[in-house]
Image (tube, rainbow, N blue to C red; front, side, top):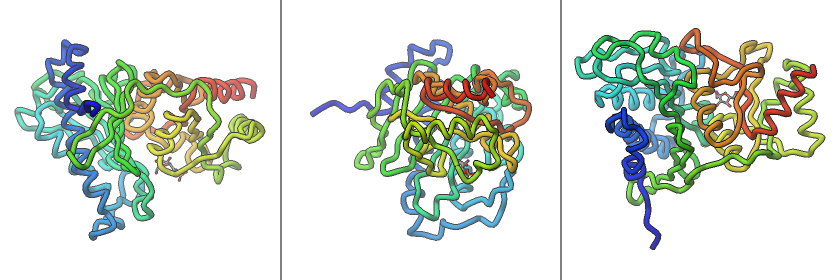
Length: 328
Ligand code: P6P
C-alpha cells in the first residue's frame, strides 16, 4: 500500500526550509489546516441545517453575508487568536483589521489576510467555494499591537499563501516559496494527504474564465483578447467562484480574467486576500499574474480592501492578453 504523507508530516519534513521560523510557520500552516477541516464540516452539511441563507448583514464590500461566511470568518479568527503565532488578521468579512490584544497574541510574529469563504453566493446552489489566505511576517515590533502597516505589504513579502477548495473533494493548496503542493482531505482519517506534489501550471492552455455578461463594459483590448480566445476555439469556463476557476486552470492550464468594468472600475477582486495569495501560488507554479500593467506581486497595497483588475494563469495566455493591451 502506498504510504500517505499528511499535511503535518509534509510541513515538518520541510521545516529546514525555514530556519528562521523555528517551527512557528509550520504550526501556523497546520492550524490553518485544522480550521479548514472545521469549516469543511459545516460546508458539507450546509443544506442539512439552518446555516444556509444570509445572515442579514452586509460586509464591507456591500455583499450580503451568507451565514457560512460568518461562521468561517469566526472559525479562522478563533484559531488564529488562540494559536499565539498571529498578532492580527485582515478579512473580507471585517471592515477593519483586527489586532489581537492578549499578551501572547501581541508576541505573534505573523499577520494573516484571508477571504474565509470566497464565492459564497454559490453556497445555496451547492457550487464549490473556497478559502484564500496570505501570511506575512509583521513589520511592527513583537509585543506591540499590530498596525495597518503590518497588512499593507506587497505580495513579494508573503511567507506563505494558499487556498482551500470545498468541492467534490476538499483540497488545501499552498506555497511558502518552495513550489506548490496540494493536499486532499481524506474524511476517513480526517487528514489532508499529499495528492498533488509540485504543482505546475501548463505554460499554455485552452480555457478562459471571464464573466462575459460584463463584456460591453470592458476595455477594447480585453474584448479583443476574448475574441482571440473564441477564434482559437478555447473553452469558456466560468463558475463564479474564483477558487474553483483558479484551481481548474492551475491543473489544466487556462486564464482567469476580472478586468475593470463600469461597475467595478478598479476591478472587483481584492488585492490582499484574493489576488496576491493566488499570484504567489501561480508564480511558484510557473504562471503569471498581473493587473494589466504590473506584476500583482509587486503592487504595494494602499488600503485593506483594495481592488485591482486581475489576469492570472498560464504564462503564454497572460502574455498574449498583455500583448493585446500594449497594442491597444
Ligand atoms: P461576478 C465571488 O464573489 C467572486 O469574488 C469570485 O469568487 C468570482 O470569481 C467573482 O467574484 C464573480 O464575480 O461579477 O462575475 O459575479
